[in-house]
Image 1 (cartoon, rainbow, N blue to C red):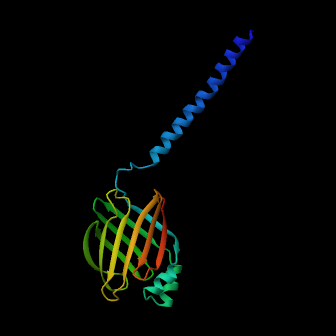
Image 2 (cartoon, one colour):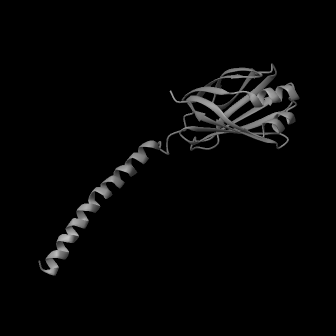
Image 3 (cartoon, helix red, strand yellow):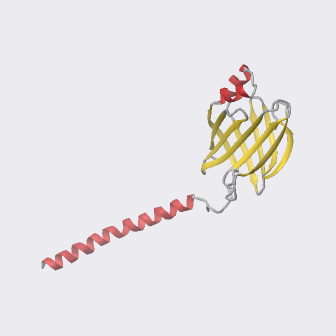
Length: 182
C-alpha cells in the first residue's frame, strides 16, 4: 500500500465510524424536542399531582391564623390535586386535612366568590401572568379574616407543578407536586 492510499482508506473508515454517531446524535436531539411542548402554546395543568414538598408550611399557616393542631395535621397529610384544565377554565379537586376543594375556576380574571375548606367565604381571581400563558396568578381574598394570598402556579417541567404562595404579610410557602403515573 502506498502511504496516500493507506491514509485515504483510514479516513474512509473513520468517516464510516462517525456517521452512525452523528445520526444517533441527531435522533437524540429530535427525541428531546419531542418531549418539549411548543413554546407558543399555553401551559396546560391537567393531571393528577401528588405533593412532594411543602416548604415553610408551618410559618405560612401560622401567619394565616391557623391553629397549632390543624398546622400539624396539614404537615403530615398527603395531598393529591386532580386538575382538568380546558381552555380558559380549570377544575380542581383535592382532599385536604382541613376539608375538600372542588372548584371550577375561570382563568380570565373574573372574580368568583366561593367557600374555602374551612368554611370561610372567599373571593378568587385567576389570570395568566402574561401573554405567554405559562404562569397562572391566583389571588384569594378571605372575606372573614381579611387575609389575602397570591399564588403563582407554574410547571418547571412536564412532570412538576409548583405553587408559590405569598400572603399580605409577605410570608411565603412553596408546594412542589409530581405528576402521578397513570
